[in-house]
Length: 91
Image (cartoon, rainbow, N blue to C red):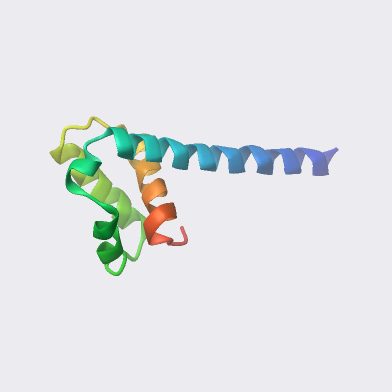
């Protein structure tokens, strides 16, 4: 019973993690991000970004500058999406 519960918890947490990335992709595409950024921008930045919190900081700065109105969890979701697609950092 305990093993089954642990496995189910892992499945739920994994699906929540992907939901965050999916939500980040939606926010990235629907926000102001594409007005200034393309995939080539992230290829250049990937050499400079070394920590996940740096991605979050940049997303936060961009969304404030563009008045996107993202909540902190949405900033995190966009950062997770960008990390998955471009930066590939280990958290």
